[in-house]
Amino acid sequence: MRRMTTLLATSALAVTASATFAQEMADSMTLVSWGGAYQASQRNAYAEPYKEMHPGLEVVWDESSNEAVAKLRAMNEAGNVTWDLVDVVASDAMRLCDEGLAMEYDPDELLAPAPDGTPASEDFGDLIVSDCFIPQIVYSTTFGYRTDMVGDTPPDDICDVFDLEAYPGKRSLEKRPINNMEWALLCSGVAKEDIYDVLETEEGQNQAFAKLDTIKDQVIWWSAGADTPQLLADGEVVMGSTYNGRLFSVIEEQDQPVAMLWDAQVFDLDGWIIPAGLPADRLARVKDFVKFATDTQRLADQAAYISYGPARQSSAPLVGEHAELGIDMAPHMPTDPDNAQNTFLYNYEWWADYRDDLDAKFQAWLAKG
Image 1: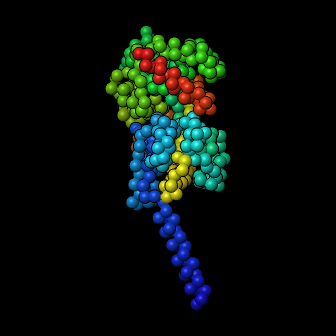
Image 2 (image 1 turned 30 degrees about the vertical axis):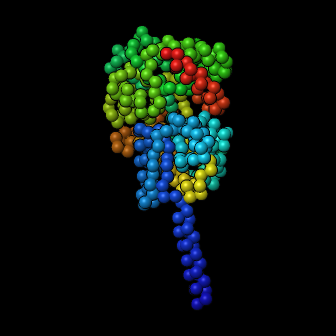
Image 3 (image 1 turned 90 degrees about the vertical axis):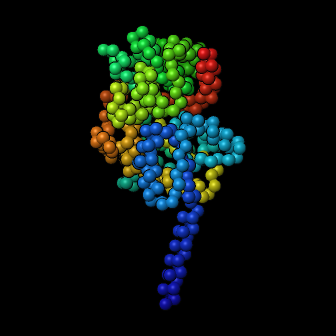
C-alpha cells in the first residue's frame, strides 16, 4: 500500500511538473518572415500543424524580415524585443550573432535528429554557417521575364538585363546592393572568381555603380519578395529579380506568361534566428516550435508548397509533388542540374563584413536620381 501511495504521489508530481512546464510556455508567438508565397509555405507546412497541436496558441506574423537587422537593433536599444523568431538570410544572421542580438544554440540540443538518428548537426552539415543560424532552405535570387514582351529571342544571359536595346522596358531590382553589385561586375567584364576581390576596392564599387547607371532610369526598386511577381503579372516590367520560389508561384500557380532566367542565379541560405534575451516563457515556446518546424518531415512538407530546397539532407528524398498542383517539384528547384548550369555562389561571410558600408553607399547612389 505504501508503495502504491508513493507511485501515485510520484505520478502526480510528474503531471504537475508537466503542467507547470506547459504553463511556462507563452500562449502567443510572433514570427517574422517575408510575406507572400514563402510565408504561406511556412504557415501551411508547420505553423498551422503546430497550432493544431497546441489549441489556444496565437501565432502573429510580421513581414519585416527585409528590415530585421535594423529593427532588432532598435528594439534592443529600446529594451523591448517584441519578436520571438525571425526569418533571415545567412549574412544577416551572422551580423546579428556578432552583435549579440541573436541567441547562440547547440544544434543537437535544440533541433530534432533525422529519422535514422543522425544528429541535427550532421543532417544540416555545412549549412549551419553561424552559431546563431538555424537553416531552413536553399534558395536562389534570379530573374523572371514576361514571355509576351521579349520578342522571338527570350533572354538567356544575365547580361540581357542590362541590354535595353534588345529588351526595352522596365526592370525590377531589389533595393539593396547585394546581388545587384555582383551582376553589374559580371556584366562589365569581371571574372566570376574575382568578383569579391574587385568589390572590396573603391574602384570596383564605382565600376559596379557605373554599370547599374546604364539602366537606373528603367528600374523599379523592390523591397518585398512579392513585389516583382506582381509587377510581372501586371506587365509593368519586362523582367525582374526575385526569389525563385516567388517566380514558381506566379508561373505555375497563377499561370502568368512569365518564364525563368536561371543564368547566374545566386544561391543563398535562409533560416531562423532566435532574438537574444527572450523571457523564459517565450523562449520555451520558441524552442518547442523550432524543434517541430525544422524536423525532417516539416522541411520536406514546405517544399510541397514552394520550390526551395530543404536544408536537411534527410528531407530531400521526401520532396515529391506540389501539394495542390500535383506536379513534380524537383525540376523547379534551383539545384536541379538543368537550372544550375551557371550559378553564382553568394559570399555571405563577405557581405556580413561589408554590408553596412555598401548599404550606405548604395542608398547615396540611389538618392542621386
